[in-house]
Image (cartoon, rainbow, N blue to C red; front, top):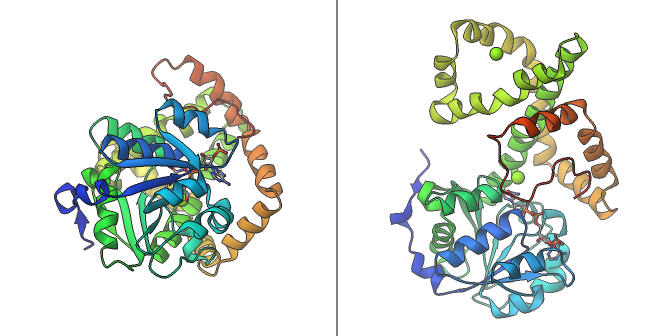
Length: 341
Ligand code: NDP
Ligand code: MG
Ligand code: MG
């Protein structure tokens, strides 16, 4: 069984004795920066000139510098820009300012695993990857809890990279929930697979097909929305608490029997074959190459797919319904119906 590290296994004073640069101030960036600062760590933010996030970070009282200046000052550099721009930011503004004894950190192994970034000798390369969205990482920390995280060491130049990564994980609240050790390869491949096959790709497609099947059969879209999307959270909460077994324990016998006889009809063995093909494309770099090639052209395929998703009828139904849900409150900066971000 994998070893799980908690607060007592990590020494916060290690990261408190370093100078940290957080590159990027988006979903993960704002959460790492604010949590570390609240943990007594010296933090500065590195951003591109004219960046939209610059004022946001300053409004929190954080020091914001150009990426190059932030890296120059720091001895721990956490790269939290989108994966597709990391190699350019790294080559232009980070690599020239890294010196022996510095540490280069990531929250996802994409650029190391697929060879887009390789660090110079003498520099630790490690990962602290919270297993949750950045806004949850901040929200949980403020509530005195944390989001579980993975740590990995790709290059241990100092001999202390793992202790440093654990200390950083404690600073952002990860060890409050539990931290598991992995490798860059394992984290990258399983993270991409999980989000593509199950969490994001799989679930989104399943919900859309469910909504289409009910509305095409003449049922009201609002009712369909409740049955195939809204209740999902309630079911998933039970799974998180006690696995699939607890979910089946809580639902009616009718629902449980339907689960057994119809689940495998909808998600048939063919789906597993499709999942294996998705995993193979991740492992051999086909997915990474397709993503980066499209991004290098300005993301035409990405933008087209995003617009198509946002135009699905379930989104319009959901927007109207959620306005009536006084109990669902968003406390982040997401805007309903945003077509481009
Ligand atoms: P976001 O897209 O939310 O953050 C983007 C940030 O990077 C913004 O502040 C943006 O500035 C800045 N940025 C964009 N381009 C540049 C550039 N060329 N130079 C400097 N700064 C730039 O990223 P995420 O937080 O989603 O992802 C960051 C990393 O964390 C990725 O490796 C991702 O895989 C990983 N991760 C993300 C999770 C998540 O919750 N989203 C979960 C776990 C890991 P501006 O917008 O002002 O231009
Ligand atoms: Mg991911
Ligand atoms: Mg029902």
